[in-house]
Image 1: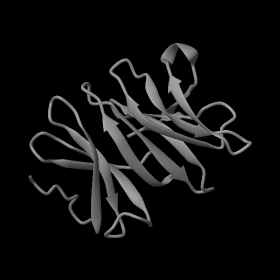
Image 2: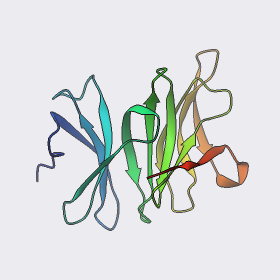
Image 3: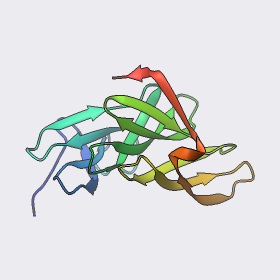
Length: 145
C-alpha cells in the first residue's frame, strides 16, 4: 500500500485508476473530506498531480480518468447546482440530464459515453447513460484550459 495525498490539501480522495496508471480524485479543504470545498485532480503514472476545476465551479471532484486520459466528474456551481463534466484534451463539457435539478457523472469510456445519476424535478433519483449520439451534452468552446 502507498499513500497518495494531493500536495497542500487537508485531505485527498482517490476515485479511479486507469490501465496506464493515471489516477483521479479530489482534494479536500477538510481532512476527512466529509464537507467543505473540493477540487478535481489527476495524478500521472509518475506521480505528478494536476489540479483543476471546471469553469464556473466552486467545488468539484474527478470520478474517473479513462484510458485515453479523458476525465469525467461532477462540480457544483455558485448557485449550488451540481453538474456532470467531461474534461478531454483541455476542453470542458458540462453534462446535464435534460430537466434534471442534479446530475452526477460517475464514469465514462474512450468514446466519451458516460454513466451516472440525476434527480428530476419531483425529487426522484434515476440512473442514466449518456451517449454522444443523443446530444445530451452541452459543449462550451469557451471553457478551454
